[in-house]
Amino acid sequence: MARVAARFSVSGEPSTHPVDEVLPLPKLALYGFQHVLAFYAGAVIVPIIVGGALGLTTEQLVYLINADLFTCGIASIIQAWGIGRIGARLPLIQGVTFTAVSPMIAIGLGAGGGTAGLLVIYGAVITAGIATFAFAWLPPKAFRTVMRLFPPVVTGTVITVLGIVLIPVGLNDAAGGLGSPDFGDPKNFAYAGGTMLFILVLMKLGKPFLSSISILIGLVAGTAVAFLLGDAKFGGVSNSDWIGITTPFHYGAPKFAWFPILLMLIVMLITMVETTGDTYAVGDIVGKEIDSETVARALRADGAATALGGVLNSFPYVAFAENVGLVRMTKVKSRFVVVAAGVFMIVLGLIPKAAAIVAAVPHGVLGGAATVMFAMVALAGIQTLAKVDLKEEKNALVVGVSLAFALLPATVPVLFKDHMDADLSSLLNSGVTLGATSAIVLNLIFNGLGKSDPHQVARAELPAQSSAAPDAAPEAQAPGEAETVAEATVGAAVAATAPGAGKKDADDGAAPAS
Image (tube, rainbow, N blue to C red; front, top):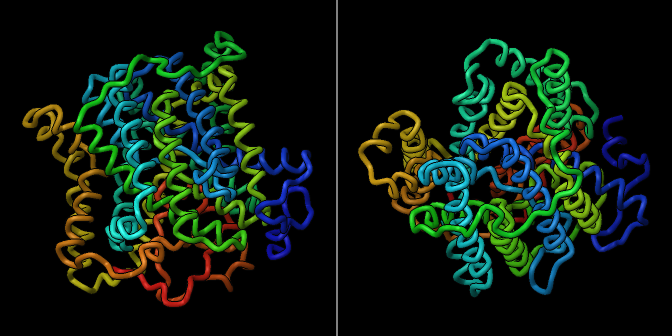
């Protein structure tokens, strides 16, 4: 039965539409809204976490959510529709990367928090976006050389570090949110535990599509329970406007500082590999051959969307992995479905009342959902590392020492707070930055620059099947297939749990350079 269900869309009809087919409007709307549902929770959690960490007001947080959704819509249309040599013209949804969450919080707090911190973040985001856009126009040889910095031992370590660093963020929200008067109240943990349990039950017992949006449903259910018990306040919804326009530089002119810019450039290097992996994944699913020019067009869209995000008060963008899993599950291959989803997101980004509802989600509920997502990100990294020969001492040292560096900011915060220049602290006070940099440098020292095709290094592996969809088992990854960092975003957390998400077949000889 699962085999049959996986070959049908939500409408019950077989879905084998070619990537360039323009579907009838009703189907475009239905399939596009389905993508928004799978994407929504991952999209809005980033501004909530960053805004909460920087101490933004509810009104400012609502604006941040609207700006994020509005820019997500534009970015997805650019990627799927294509403008000249910008955009992969594939069904790829663009969303804010979770790789940037910890670094952005470090940058913002280092600049004093609040809107002052946002201005420094936006300066770094705009610069990194322009740099990414320019990088994607480099000659192929230079492009391949940079991508060889990310063999599986590096990408697996970075994904694992990302999850480990973000899990405490989710747990702090589960406790009520740092700085809140009820921080540590058992009531908050009860909401978090209930939300987490509800999500896990949905993923275990739900149908494929229901499982793919379990995070979103969990947030809704947890908030509903909190509202009935008097712990979710929606007063801000009535005070919010029905229509609100996102304007460039809403919080003021961005500020450009060298260390935050360098930190964001490191983030974008990682996201480039994420997008490369997702591009190959969706290319295999829709039956379109992916060459270096397609990857370059996808990265140009990332760079353009990231720079635009800094202008429109949002953050860095990357292809979302959970939507890659959704394309595979539904077999709806038309890129114009993603264009329709982009239109929906733009509309949602113009409705402050909708963002105000999201901003009212209690910290405990948010923490329960976020912890599940972040834990799945860490698991995706461990799955990648499982294919690396860790019996080889060089690889083991790369992973082990990098994990140790990643834990330094959380373990010895006084080093960065009291014994380091503020600019240097904003760069280094991030487990993601220290862990990723350590993995890249140590891999170069011990293993040198890989000789494999860099695109094969990023060949996509969608997250593993759950028992709910045994039909994808024959498509399991072949021995020696190269790994990807497609799961490195929060999208991976949802995709990794989606019963319809399977693994792709690798090209012959696609061995990782580890």
